[in-house]
Image 1 (spheres, protein in one colour):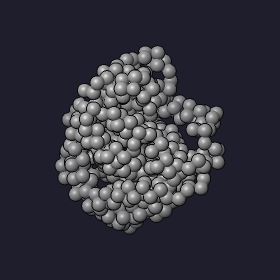
Image 2 (cartoon, rainbow, N blue to C red):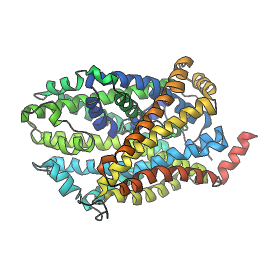
Image 3 (cartoon, rainbow, N blue to C red):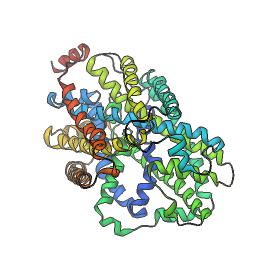
Image 4 (cartoon, protein in one colour):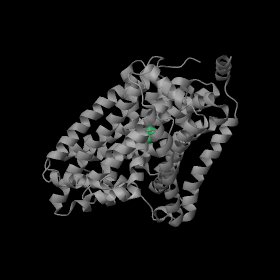
Length: 501
Ligand code: PHE
């Protein structure tokens, strides 16, 4: 089977950066930083970046490039027994697409609402009530919420139209448009944010270091969690993207470029967001910490409120902000859909295009669950479990396997060196990714588990948490083992025999 390759070196870098920069940079990073000690958080964040983020990125690039395959195919080539470890992230990626698309859909609706500030004065009531139609009960779903479902269909159509064109004509082209556009949008938003009256207050709040937080284990875990999610490592995304690289392609350098671009962008977003929050605090005459809110609340409740009191052109800046969310989200989404589609294509020997069609149909139907009236609740639960157990556990399994089970750390580093501008430092990789990261990830998963057992997450009923949380985590692993047992499609099997011969 002929594998597509990126048409240009920048094409690959832009796609990797596009995957990394996503919803996580615009609304997650600013708030996580703020919550975990402001300026003092930057230290754990940078340490997590250099001890876990960049080393893992280098490994994932090297695995994809050396073994030329989607995560399951690459892992099968490393060791047949371990194919399931490639399917696990693929299935987690699939689950993430189901609700990531829904958040993008909200942003699509809000870009439209922004033009007329349709949310009115009560932005909270508008979001939960008129827009999401959130019921008081958790189950049944309350049926589809038309306003969300329509935007969701648009998101899936856009994703389909990009992906059906393939890797270089579709994904690469889209990112070549998306990334510069996103940078321009973000620069406009940030410049406006930091020049608003009162912005300085917000920035002070963001960056005034609370050094005592450095002794809090939770802060370190938050830093590692943010780096993992933000760099898209642990989900097979980067392995699959690197499998499309031509034989001669710089890996180490590209990993650094991707990581630094991603963090730079997060910083830019944080400046803009906190400038705006400072402005709002001043306008309302309240302290900054009363305005700041996390996650969904920041983008869809606090931001509309801020836009309501904008000195001028609130409609336009609102539109640009939500378009930026959509663009950032779309380029991450296609990287997730791509892992799933490419893995299915590799395994069953069907064409990439056929796999793209199949994945879109199934994922679209699955995502409808999150477009129901109670969808936000399911989204919140699934997201919590995926973030705490999905990504971290896969990351843990990945580093343990590379260093201590397959023992391919040396060959992978050699491989990266053989094609890259500069050599990677072995002691740095071994200490950080081989020793420190697995220890920290174990602690992290353990703490999350203890917290979840001590207190039901979000105060939701246990049945709901078991159904959407624990069962999802478990089913995904079981399914990974089952898929390993299915036979490979003809073309791949033949190709493998040839390699082995
Ligand atoms: N990195 C993306 C973000 O910050 C999310 C993502 C995670 C995308 C994993 C792909 C894979 O929003």
